[in-house]
Image (cartoon, rainbow, N blue to C red; front, side):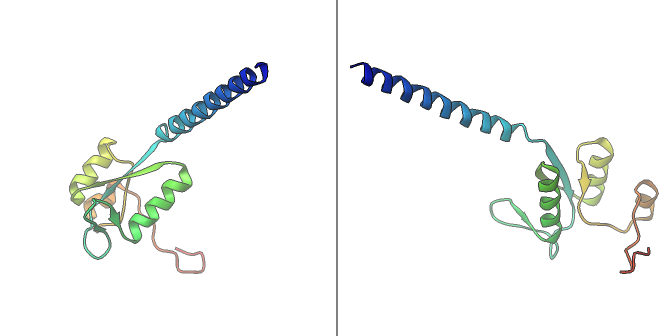
Length: 120
């Protein structure tokens, strides 16, 4: 009888420990900070599937950046002007892609491409 009682108590403690570890893991996943990415180019570079997920080289790069930074990536679609306003207001963290705009180039620093020999 004592063995049965002890075994029941052990099973209850193991079950409580498992549930607590699952709750802690879920809390850590929810607490993961966000990387809000503005996307403005649709078509050949970025496409949206029927589920509302975005695909393309730029979105893949932003997913890799978010993974490296330990952040969950959320894409915020809009026009270039909307994305630029959101970036300035702090509503998004980064813009995917580029847009040739002389007015914007005064506000945002853009690097020249590397020539392959470490020179810009």
